[in-house]
Amino acid sequence: MERIHITQHTSLGALWFAGWLFSIGYLHLDFWRGLLGLIVWPYFLGAYWAP
Image: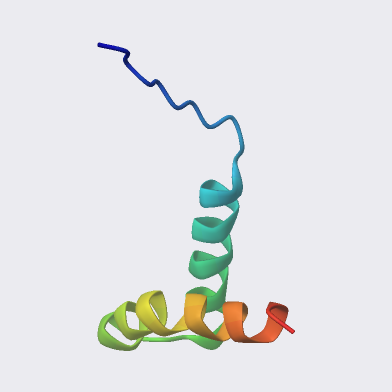
């Protein structure tokens, strides 16, 4: 049986997280709006970059 091992060597996740934290601080969002931004922000980025 063959085992597949996937390794990702990019820091896009860390860059995304840093951008999310920057956005929360820049917009002076409270905790709940920041949490909502965690869910909604990737959708808007995907919708912007898809076309």
